[in-house]
Amino acid sequence: MHIGNNVFNMHTYFKRKFERLILNDIQNFPCVAILGPRQCGKSTLALHLKKTLPELLYLDLENPADLRKIEDPLMFFEQNRDRLVCLDEIQRRPELFPPLRSILDSGRKKGQLIILGSASQDLIKQSSETLAGRISYIELTPFLLSEVYKSFDDMLTIWLRGGFPESYLAPDDSISGRWRVNFIRTFLERDIPQLGITIPSKNIERLWHMCAHSHGQVLNSSKLGESIGVTHHTIKNYLNILEQTFMIRQLQPYSNNLKKRLVKSPKLYIRDTGILHSLLGVETFNDLLGHTIYGQSWEGFVIENIMTEMHEYKGYFYRTSNGSEIDLILEKGSKKIAIECKSSTAPEVTKGFYNSLEDLGIDNAWVIAPVKEPYNIKKGIRVASIIDFLKEMNV
Image (cartoon, rainbow, N blue to C red; front, side, top):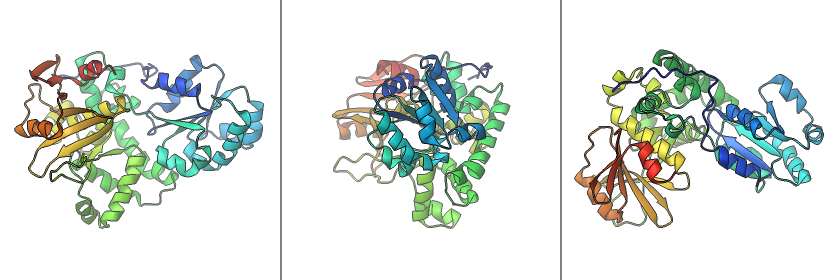
């Protein structure tokens, strides 16, 4: 497999999947929160929205000049009551939330405020309980495959480099890798402390590297704790921080009262495969092909893209004590979809997969692999790429 020369103008704008949802929520809520990791494109998206929303007024709360404008928030919003105000990096200024409630209530209209934050809904809520009932939350991830896909090479590039725009759009793999190394360092040395988290950055760094080596595996918090010299309760706290800063995903096991001995711990994934590869020293696609993480990397790439695109579904993995397993189960109401992730271009599934489908009564199953054309391997079981799967799901 070959990755093409994926060189782009860094000012190229890729339409984001959640633009329509954001515009819809602006019309239906006083405040819209767009949350996601730093450098995933939140600010770029907000500035792009000015083309549709010329009344939008953007303030960067890390910019001293913009920060001075809002020293008296009540006066600022009164002077700009006909504008849609966007406050970037809101988690840096939690003291703004109480006056924002009064401002939103006095305005009594939809589409007054957009806030952008590099922390999860739960972290933001710690400061913003006063906005309950007035705010909608939308998570913006780094680029999804469907947002950049034009050819098979685009899939290989975003799989290797991840979806952070500066990494994906870099002129070559070397520059992309250097950007990710710097991102990791900045996250540990600056972002974590600025969120008010007082955990030693070395502990988080060691844990993050260990999560990379455990990517796609069932969490063993006691083992991780022993390696770092902390309790398993502390490890769970650290993992919660990494999850709420959008760095990892803990995929929960599927149970649903089945009469089976099931694995009860979550599986760990580094959400962005580019960050995963940097943590493991994987620099090129040839490195990835020869690395033991190859299959698990593909699994995480598939799960992250599908769960983000199909956000109305709940996602789980299924594994019994005798080895029957399904990588991802999507559930919405009574509807269940089973997904197995295979990194081979000629994928084969095991007997355990068929047993799991029978256990769960699932007749809509997919094998997601880096194939160029979809095909059936059995009634109700279809092999497809991520892109073709999402198309057939009408996403």
